[in-house]
Length: 360
Image 1: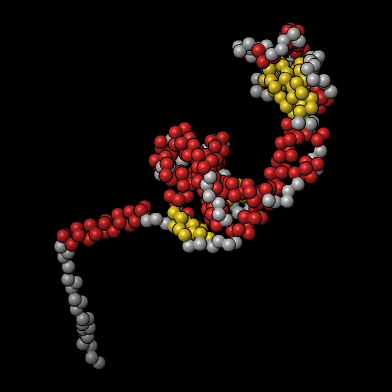
Image 2: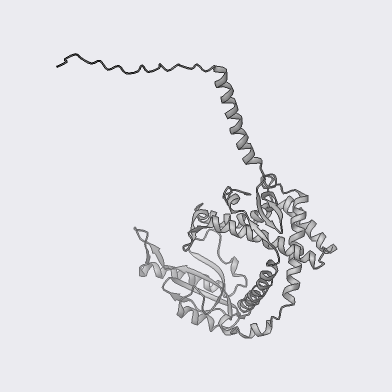
C-alpha cells in the first residue's frame, strides 16, 4: 500500500494589478458630471413644454397664466377662509381629487373655452369695435394700475401687450356669446311665470335687539335669570320710546354700547333667522309701522317694517332661472363648436406645476 502523501497543487492566482487613476481624470469626470447635472436642470427650467394644443397650435404656460391667475385667485380666497387648508382638501370623494386638482382642470377648461370660441368668433367675421377696443384699453390700465401688484405683474409677464391680447379675446368671446344666447329660443316670461311670487315675497325691516342669554363658566349659552331679563327689558324699553319718535334708527345706539344692537335685515318666509312666532308677527306688519316690544327665547326686539312686499328676492330668482337656461343653451352650442377643433392637453407636463403657486 502506497502511503505516500499526495500533494495537490492549485494554480496560482494572478495577483490583481492595481490600476492607478490619474487625479486629473477624476477631476475631469467630476466636472463633466456636474456640467451634465446643471445642464439637465437648466434644460428642465428653460424648456418650453406644450401645455395644450388646438388644431396643432401650441400653447405654453406663459400663454395660459391669465386664465390660471383667475382660477388661482378665486380658490386662494377660500384657502384663506379655511386657514390655508383648502387647496389640499378632497372635494370629490369619488375620484379623490383635491381643490388643487379641480382648480387645474377649471383653468385648462377656461383656456380652451376662450381660445376655441375666439377662433369661432373670428371665423364668423367678428372683430373688435371701437367701443370694444376702448373697453379693453381701460380694463388693461385698471389691471396694471390698480388691481395687479408689481410682484404679480413681474411673475406672470403681465405686460400691457400681453393683457391687451388676452382681454381682446375675452371681450370678443363675450360679445359672440351674448349674440348666440339672444338667438336661443328662451321664453323669459314663461320662466318668470313658473316661479311662485309668494314664495319669494321679501320683507325689509330694521330692528333693535337686546339679548337675554349669557355664557356660563363653561362657556355654554344659557338664559339670564329673571332679574337680568328685567334689566334688559327696562333698557330696551327706554330706547323704544325714543325710537318711536326717531326717523334714523341707525343713530339710536352709541358706538360704546355693548348690549343693544341695531340691524337691518331682509328675509323671505322660508328663510329667516327669526323664530316662527316672531316671524309671523313681523310679516303681518304694515309699512312704516313700529312693533311693540317683542320677545323670543334669545331676547327682546322692536321692529320697523320698511317694505313688506319687496320684489328683490323674486327678481333675483327669476334672473337666476333665466341665466341657468341661457347657460344650458349656450353649453350645448359650445359642445357642438368644440367638436370642430382637435385639442390635446399635456397632463404629464401639468404634473410639474402646483396650483396655488403658479401665478400668485
